[in-house]
Length: 202
Figure 1 (cartoon, rainbow, N blue to C red):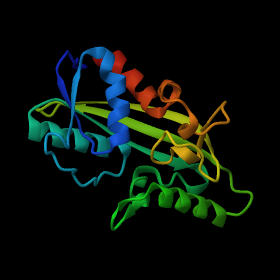
Figure 2 (spheres, helix red, strand yellow):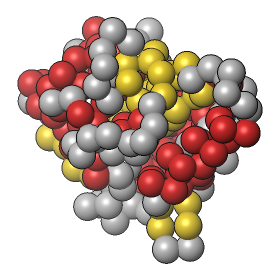
Figure 3 (tube, rainbow, N blue to C red):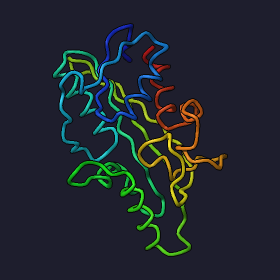
């Protein structure tokens, strides 16, 4: 049986400022007080899962265990058809450098990988988001969202994060990083997953 979330404090199990803002904005109408894992001194666990669900559940359980509060985690990524679904669950890994994550480098890696496929390689791609809510007793609920589109180059826009500057959603000509945040919230993979979460938990 699905467990409901009432007005309470909820840990957002992420250290990514872009994700934290998006999730806090989505939760605001539900009288949920959000606090980030970083604010609770919860470190980032190693993401050892092989699926988006595995990693989202792992992160949510980790924060719920350490704080004694319900926790919401997001695992999301860019899947490029011509690259066999890469970077996929390893989306953030493509941005890792010795001095932190460099998303410009990550976008360049995706473009370089596409270029090696030749001029006929398709540029279809989609973002996937799995939201997992974990309670301190170990119970987990999860919800998956998706948005389809194509990749463009060079990157465009300044208001997104991650791979947003190279992703153009279907039926638009602007990248996610060129959309007003409210427009992106209405159509994004995170919004799709959140709509399912909202219907089930609130």
